[in-house]
Length: 197
Image 1 (tube, rainbow, N blue to C red):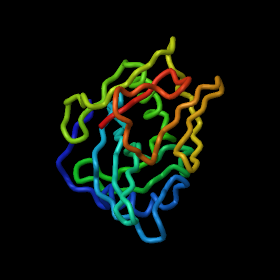
Image 2 (image 1 turned 60 degrees about the vertical axis):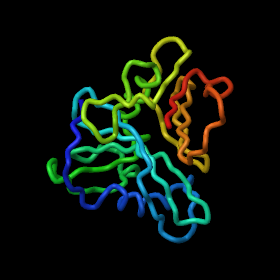
Image 3 (image 1 turned 90 degrees about the vertical axis):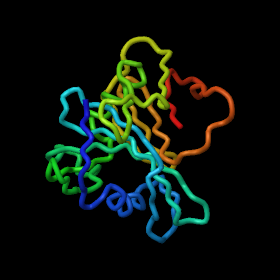
């Protein structure tokens, strides 16, 4: 179980994202720096208790219309080998010391836990409270057998596509859109999905 510490972060998560988001191909903002506010999210637990996993939702109010982004982040106590391209930045945690923040779509621990969430083997956790499930996050999987976890991430204008050598593709929607009214169902041909309010 992840323990949520009430402490300081320098720089803050929003400060890290303000400089990182404009470098992403799916960022919809203009030439000004983003003006970010936290809009929600959830956490997943690392079974080993070593990596923090957070799906952060932020709203950028710098443009003519606000834009919402889903930013999966992982927090580590040491650099992740071979993931320099996915480093969002480093910060000083008031309890844990220096932390390396990564784009979670490039972190194997997050990818394994995301697959487990889709399959229903783990439950999303509250973003701000320790040991409290987030019941607003739901997952569905109609496929058989375990999902692969050996994803390769490719960012494009529509978000991040995670693909495996076996042909499985997971699309992480980075720019959030309101859901249509009525029950949510997977996209055509999809075997699973995760949704939240």
